[in-house]
Amino acid sequence: MSAEKNRVEASRWLATGNEDLATAKVLLQAGRYAHACFHSQQAGEKAMKAVCYMLGGDPWGHSASRLITQLKAIDSSTFNALHDQVEDAARLDRYYVPTRYPNGLPDLTPDQAFFAEDAVGAIRMAETLLERAGQILGNK
Image (cartoon, rainbow, N blue to C red; front, side, top):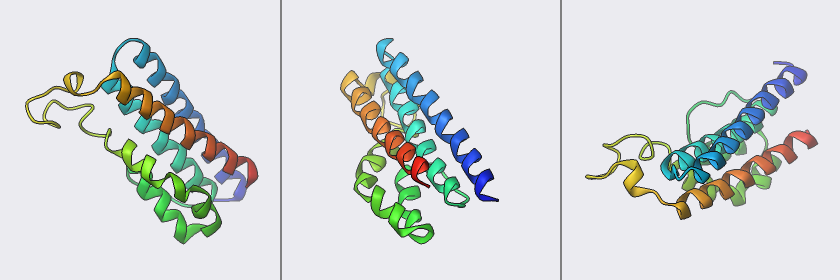
């Protein structure tokens, strides 16, 4: 892809990540904590995919932390700029499956296992990833 196409694709992913974050906040207010956590994970994942697309990568998968570590091979300065977010991204990754499926946790449904504190933390981590991705896209 050309640099302009990379920028357009990255912007699309970042915008969709921001929409997921807005959805997570609505779900938090509605007391739907598991769903808020999931949409936060989606926001973080899409933020990191936006960065990958901006750099000409072809991101695949659903792990925000893995997407960050893969940046090392694409652009080491961008990897260095995001490396301090690997742990928070991994925390968000934990919300990918068990927030959606009743067999993701032993004998509990997602709504029984996730609480306001989880959702607030997930939203905070997603906000940081989206902010950092926005900064990187603005600088590239």
